[in-house]
Amino acid sequence: MLANYLAVALGALFGVLARVLLSNWIKKKWTVTFPLATFIVNISGSLALGILTGLSLGPRLSLLFGTGLIGTYTTFSTFNLENSKLIRRKKGTVFLIYCGGSYLFGIAAIFFGCSLGKMMRIMIGL
Image 1 (tube, rainbow, N blue to C red):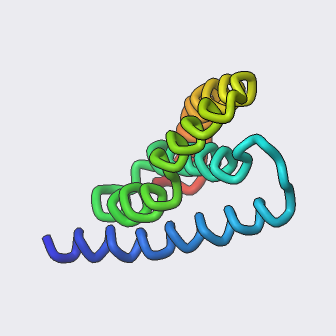
Image 2 (cartoon, rainbow, N blue to C red):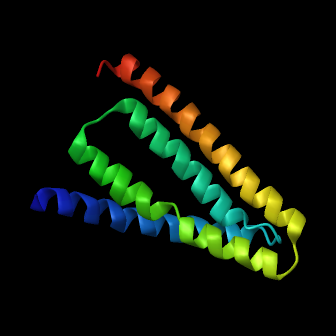
């Protein structure tokens, strides 16, 4: 049981660091009304979770990478906060593109990642 908690904690440490570093880099590189940093983080996290699911690596590695790393890398609360800011600022079109695009591309990334993970699993013989 303790090993499971440690796996989640270790993954979480690296997930949150990856999110902060990538988000800050994107925000410095591109200044746009669209919440690009969170969008990229969440879509890439969906792809990564899909790959992990397709690989079927087992419970401990799923806790480390899925719950810990990807769980803290992606950010649903920031997604909702940014959507509420877009609504308050009367950026309806940007809100619809961001919200709809996040769900559409996020789900597509999960499906693509699962297929990719299954192919990788076959290729490496798991």
